[in-house]
Image (cartoon, rainbow over all chains, first blue to last red; front, side, top):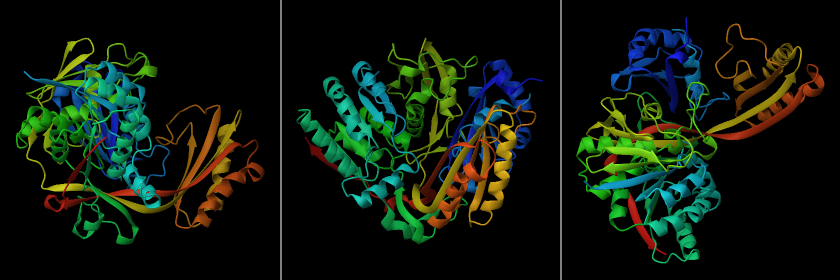
Length: 100
Length: 438
């Protein structure tokens, strides 16, 4: 077992109460592993405390990247959230902790 | 092939100023763009304008203009910015004043208004599944304008263009439309120009900011991070670089992270100018620290403008207290239980109590060692100030009435302004351009 951090890098961005987390393979040859292991099911499970419904995954082979769109809880939009991390910026680091 | 150079001078209202000066001085730029309006910033600016009709523009406008205008004037760099916020006209007046003080007579400052659509609120339509807010709570409403009016202001000879709410990439696309005479319905060019704008709009986030992770993604000299610039060709492809001796880096990794930043569906990135498609985008390293970007596409622009509605969202009260040394976690947990019981009676909504250092970001991780120090943080939403202050008093009371050795209490109550998105038919919104000469 290893963590996603070993083979990929991530960034989180926000739009209202949606957060996107992009995931990119450092090496092209690891992109297939991302497709296989970083699935909607596994990511939705990892983020279960933060989301209201399963996340959506977009694949961007040109960038060796995946883009996850997660819907946060209704009270967790950027401008309403009571969380210390109102934007959800730190969620890209949670993604890196995924075991692959 | 004709080429122009656009620099990113700011990625948010409070951004560092010296990287913009460095770009204006050494970037051989044609345009310098400052993106300074977050989702909520404009609503807060409207509140300031209510108190003072000459306020409501970016609080750093004066400092920025003083810092960059001399180099821009010397090097023929034109400035584009949404620092007008809720009051582009006052921002333009202030800029004219600064220009005169600096002796830059003849400097032409354009002001673009028309994004304020509060008077059209009956025509708002819901954005996706999000209901429109109650009329009584609305503070402000600004529609995201596109590049058109900005390009027109540049064609009119503006040296500085100041706007309020404009889609971030449109600030950059406007310069390209103007410089290359791109047809507005050349959707692939609009898509590629939007990609370039999107890469630049967060400034340092393309050059190694929001990126460094020691041992995995190392970035040199973040303390003097250089902001990016794009040398854009007439076909829309661009070379992304920065001033050579500045800190930071531009690599395949920084470009990839930034092109999908705040993007939902990568094949449909919606702006007022185009629906951009980033799925076929290509990044190639042309030289160390110089990345070529090409291949973004576009589809016809949407029929509606997006509107950002600022609404009064009541009060948020927050309090924090720390515990350290042996048993820190147990004492913080005890404080949590006390607060939960005490605050159950305050009429708070959505009460949160988190332990910073353990569970405030992602929830409690399994099998994590107890940290040496813990900081308890509580936050809740209130309608009445009396109730909000009760929360802050309850946290302060933990000194004398709570677990041993509670320390470092901080408390705050703030009025919260939230943002609700909506849509409005494009034909109802009319950008207005005016020009003043220093």
